Image 1 (spheres, rainbow, N blue to C red):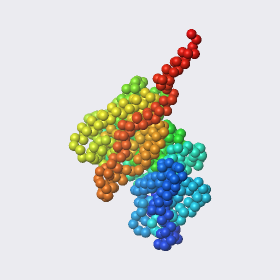
Image 2 (cartoon, helix red, strand yellow):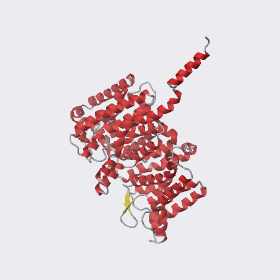
Image 3 (cartoon, rainbow, N blue to C red):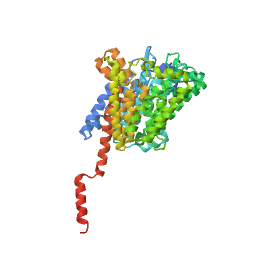
Image 4 (spheres, rainbow, N blue to C red):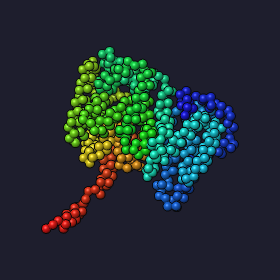
Length: 568
């Protein structure tokens, strides 16, 4: 772990152990070229396919039989896209991607095979195979030793997590969910979003935090915060109340603020997991839940840019998913900081949560008015231009914008503003109706999850870090025991699909329509959630409640029995 962290912290330059291992093992082709194939898909997949047919012949279901193949394929994809941006000079010249895919596949692929046969000696053989495969990558001058160590660690993490996360019919292990050793999983996973921060110069690190920092300093001098620009020409795009909250940040040294912001974000992530993802935590434990969140694309992006999304999700989840007298106040603060949580307002209204609605409206209006009055030089600019000018965010048709508007802009269709407004209105009506039905059935988490996805879909811009809202509908799926859909959702959140689709589109390796679907997959998931999540979580809940609700025939029979037993 220390070797991996140090390798990233020095911008990918080879370390002392890397150079020593390369000198000791570099032998060119020969046995190493043969041994290294034990970590390749060309060997592992045929073996797993044969095992799958054998298990099927022995009476196992197809789903159970092919699951190891799916796990390996998913892990290879995640490993590739997680470290795809971490290129470094290779030992044989050129550049290589950080982490050894062969080392990871050797641990996971043969580990899955050992699990199938349930022999402890098999894991010893797996360790030996993984060791020689990893060292062969160094001998062939394909990877540094630190790349291999990262691959081994990723493989171990995938093997452990797959046992309790991927297989839905296996109960969580008490050892995994409660043991202090389970915290080794998030301890390793936190390096995925945090360690790359050390490779970025301080003036470039957490670019969105630099916006808050600079706008706060403008607010402190009485200047118009909407005239502020960073050295990257990034403007302040939030309501004035957010600038008020940013003003104290400008008084802290930037380096210290970046450290504190990262620590606060990780603390908020724990809160989101414990409050907003309680069904997931109850299923797989807090350590595994945090590990999965830490490697997800929204959390990686949140920490990379120093965003506020995690704090807003925590604020809304703590406000709406817990019982307290002033419910709605936290939502009002979130709306005053960023307008997208306002999608919860119509739901509070139609479900007749009058007190919560009044608190949300009152707090958001009071905070916004306070921001306008205290930052009066910014008031006119915000009310008449900044509030309506979504182009202030930059080019809205880039692949990172996963809102409906972003997808329409990339489609090249005419009259995009009208199409977006019409589709947003339809989605708001459908989403509010679905959340209303869920609230009536007693599924508050499902209702909050639908509206979280709605906020992503109808916002003018929904960058990758905005997708942290997706943890709420994910938790609703787990609560409804939709484990396979939950797994698919977690994969969509982890893989950087917009970047992969954009690369494929540039390479022209498939039809452009396919790559556009890959680019828009996360945005389409938000739309699908608004449309179908109410059906998915209500249908399962209703089926579970059916035995407790007698049918008409049962009511008649019960009445007849009572009549016969009653005295004349």
